[in-house]
Image (cartoon, rainbow, N blue to C red; front, side):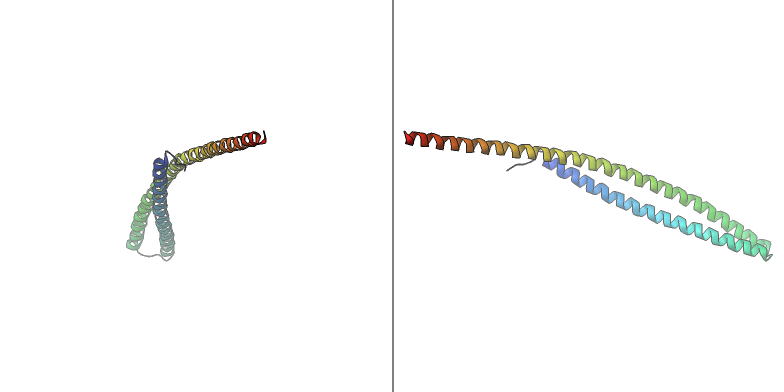
Length: 149
């Protein structure tokens, strides 16, 4: 029975790859959440700008306009901050993807080595079996010759 000498290392590399996949999934969820928050902020800012234009058209008080302008300014600051959060989350997703790719490469190298060694082992076994069969056939042939004499 063939046993791959680096099986423990291969299992460890598979575990690392699985962990990297889980980390990537978690980071993608965080990125999606940050992107949805950014979308909500942008939608809210559009609505507030629309209301401000509507108020300007109706000639409202200066206090209302200042309130809207202050709120709009704060919303823009939050929007800028959320853009930074999204950019950071995107960068982390890319890092996790790179880590996953590296883990996959490491595992695949061992998988190929295992496959190659398994194939070589199979060929060695076949050669041994063939030599044995040749020896049996040779012995049988020699016994027949001796009985024929």
